[in-house]
Length: 300
Image (cartoon, rainbow, N blue to C red):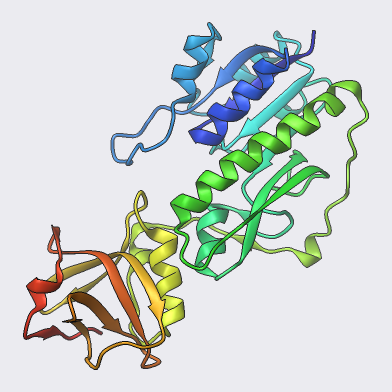
């Protein structure tokens, strides 16, 4: 029987762990993260899933210590898998798996290597992303590609909606490639990093809206950080505004700043074009069109 150690977190971790179990892999240990009280936990629990199947769970604050590496070595794993695990795994950890270490990344590598690839793809207006299963090497997201599965990004999709598609893509990707990995016949295609891109992490302040940007750029920002992420925001004379959902439209009623017309809310952007606001908050309270009757709120 094929034995694996799994480093995993988030919905991708839950679904891909279940793929391994469904295909008869002996998962000797699941390594995951303690949920942070400061984070909005909107996703599934890898620890709870492992517990349901009676799999031992570890939450190492640093999996690269000599003590933890020694523990991994005693498991004699054939494969190590990383599914949305957030810590970097150093070569000594990767070497504990006799037949290799593999990661599932939420983009079509070598594009969008690095952190939060789905959010970056939406922010930059991409029309496609996906999941990539690749061999893990010391350099992040740089090892040979084993399998990929693409998904579309529609013009008004939020990052959360795209993430749901990528979870399904990751499951399909792993399910198709796993028998080949076990049989030793999986293709390994070298990545051309020169044709790719790398992005760092994002923080809540990166959701601040610059009203000098075009309507398309602001719409993409709103989509990229919409709930369950922290949201796009700005400070106005009436208080903090959070835009949670918008649509880019060509014909909007006359008005400037944040305003209402015909029972709908609009914002005018730096290029003179408008977004229709489908969901927003002002000072933490839901904002409705009637709240803006006979007035507009300046922006920027």
